[in-house]
Picture 1: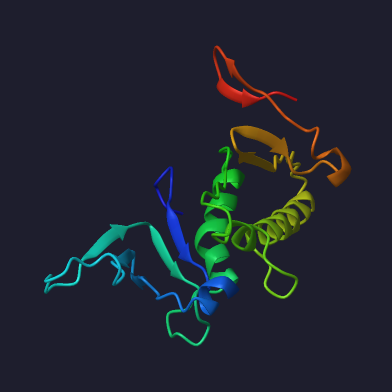
Picture 2: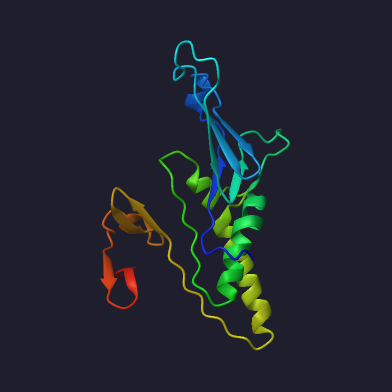
Length: 186
């Protein structure tokens, strides 16, 4: 398991239908832990002879744009790198969290939930977690599992485990505990 308390991963998603129709250029490239962001032709200054590239380094840089690409990273690899680390931390007694951040349409839901044919982090973590607790219970070890599944959007916190018909009225409050720090009420 990694000694880092926080790991950061970035994942390039496939182009959307709109981006394909607009013939949008691919401006990202992943090289190991680096993500390279190239300026588009609209951003290039007239007379500039060198292409401008910004490089960002993360714990993981995943290329999931095109499955035919040799360095394509499927859902299973994301789980092996990130999900298993979270599970190991939890089984060692630490609180564990997976936090997906990005603008609407950036691929958070696919990475977290996936599809039936390509399950994401959450179903894989849950399946592995409960498989492991069942095998542990055979050794007379007991487990207590608590999970929260929340969305923070437009500065509102919502419980995603509530039924859909209660979703609109479901606005949770973030509070500050004097000893334990911030928490979500209820």
